Length: 437
Image (cartoon, rainbow, N blue to C red):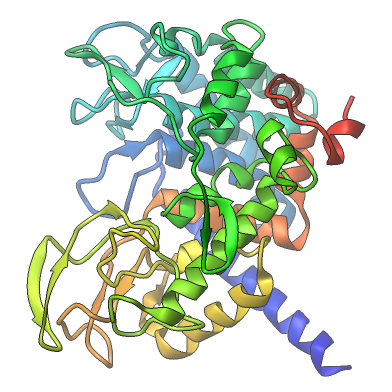
């Protein structure tokens, strides 16, 4: 066997092993009675509806990979969808949701609002996107018929137009105490999926002018020789792509620039590597195969003098490059989630973590993040490692490995009529979309 073929097979085996252990998070950190999934592995963690949506999206992968029997997966998905359909939707401060949207964090046992969290438009997006992907996969009779019906009615109930609140841009959310959050989904972000699903709604769609207004807020930059729509945290260039295959698809903005969002994410991945190579802030451990700055857990809040320089470290934060914030925290999960875009630099980076930072890997695969610069003794060379795992990190690992190996999540969502309609209303054309029904 040629060396390159043997190497490719070894890579696939390592990815499959990582994917299997990562999926275990959704089995063991969820409540099988209502389908809720913990935001993270800390003992006091509540459920995150994004983690629930990612779990729903990962169940088809689990069945295909043999991690879970089909009937067991259907049982778990049905428990989840029944709970969300039957839970209280009202203005009550302890309801589960309102106007089809759901609160960002919910109590694991009762499913009621936790921490006075916001009725989140983006987290509801990931929840219903997971339901829609599950509905595409589970296409049989009996319980699977009910599963598809519940996914459909849950999506139809979301009042996307209400979340505009008189503005072209969708609000980040709403709370019964204060009303709508003033921040809007403006500037390129993970809301690409939100706008597509909001445009595709057969019951409460937003107007096409909302998407055009969103495109007007984009920031096109050249960084380290790569022209692309800028967003600092790497996860922004990944999350919508877990569901949608953007290869060859272009909206008005991308037609003008001559690329697509897949290529845009490839360039953003290379920007991350270039930043780590240059390492302008002089953090320990950065380099060609050591990169991945994104939203993640961190060692702070703290301040320390390291190598004669005063350093400030943060806790959980949306870190980004090249303009920051950055405190030396790297996230292996964000590297994995770039696998479909740039495997030629992702696979060596994963090998680097396995060889040089084996302590970052535990029962659910890669821990959230690590920081070689932070003064500590948690690794052979010092530094800090995240104490827990986050559902937001685990889902993209499972889905993007699968998109790289087989393309299953992408294939499933190509058959989702409401997504197809939303993309077309946003002005997308080309690629698989031109061949869709």
